[in-house]
Image 1 (cartoon, rainbow, N blue to C red):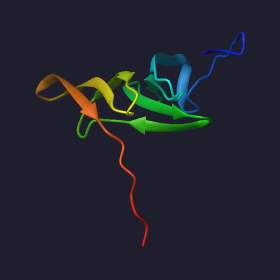
Image 2 (cartoon, rainbow, N blue to C red):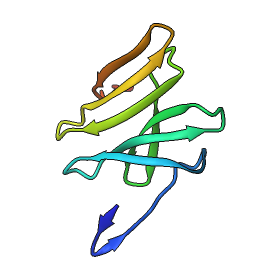
Image 3 (cartoon, rainbow, N blue to C red):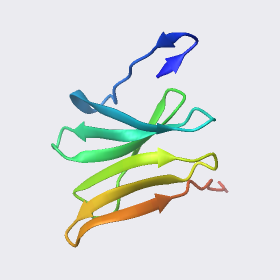
Image 4 (spheres, one colour):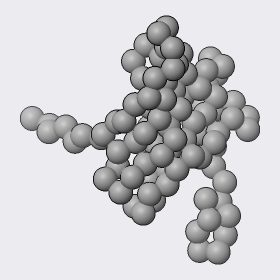
Length: 97
């Protein structure tokens, strides 16, 4: 990540060494990408500030997040028993009682 004239690198805490790849960023600074987990599979992620959230398609072996738009919609693909499929994911806020 290039900010304030400096390049800043980061790794997902649970990723294998050198197993994190940032693939997209939006104007809000949300970063999406992929990492190789301890299970050897690819998992998508979104980084918001210093918080990382894993993105996995349900039942998928591998998930890759390729990009994020200004609305926070994430585009990517997942590999499951039926083959490779694309996805678009939107984040939603949950109301707490």
